[in-house]
Length: 273
Ligand SMILES: Nc1ncnc2c1ncn2[C@@H]1O[C@H](COP(=O)(O)OP(=O)(O)OP(=O)(O)O)[C@@H](O)[C@H]1O
Ligand SMILES: [Mg+2]
Image (cartoon, rainbow, N blue to C red; front, side):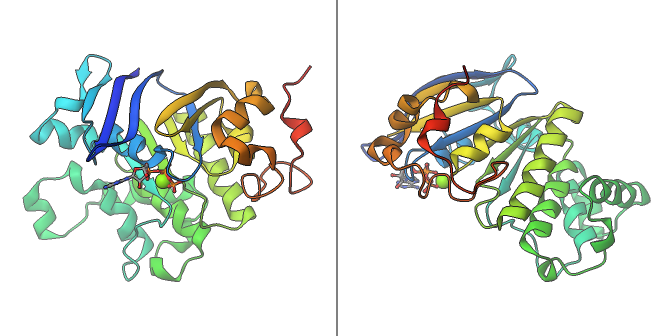
């Protein structure tokens, strides 16, 4: 269980995240939505300590994440692998090597300096690529892959960390709808089959509704909605997106996944009868 208690992050006097308290049981798939600047990335980055809270506490079971240091902090960062919108691969290295890089923080410095990979590391990387359906790209330079393939390489690299949690910051924002769907399907199946908690920032409402059992809506740094996707009523959506929520056929739902028409009318946001 991941627990946030009154977590706040200030930049100067401005609170990017304010007084957020949530509990996320192991194995949940959570979508975080909200307008640009709502605090989604800041929240996610506090979970793996890329940035530190100004106030409040992050805990994982008995461990106080927000005060970890040194090796314990590195172990925690290994436990919660991060995936980014821009993939963050090394383009000139081949796919297999990129994936094995996910293993770096499991190895000794000496082994890393020697720069050699063991048979078991290679086997593990190939299995991870097979898991994502892209083993055939193993020897290609990462930079030559399509965006969707690159994001799957990034997910395979994350799996090499044997994480307890996958944190994804807008993992499909740079992808076309088909690749977006493949990547979201991959995250979902890893979540369901491996029991790995997935927390993902998403900028489209319908993606969150399609893939996430739980949706956290943020506005102005605060959590203004937290519940199952089917409770995202038109009112809840307006609370999250403000007046823009009135015009849901534009922007918010534009890269439509799993819905047939490409856009969604506000009527379909009412809870199912
Ligand atoms: N390092 C920083 N220094 C100052 N302000 C920051 C910093 N990081 C974030 N902010 C501010 O905090 C607020 C929240 O930013 P954040 O990146 O978390 O939003 P977001 O919800 O991820 O937005 P987007 O959908 O555009 O990615 C914004 O107003 C942003 O300008
Ligand atoms: Mg962001």
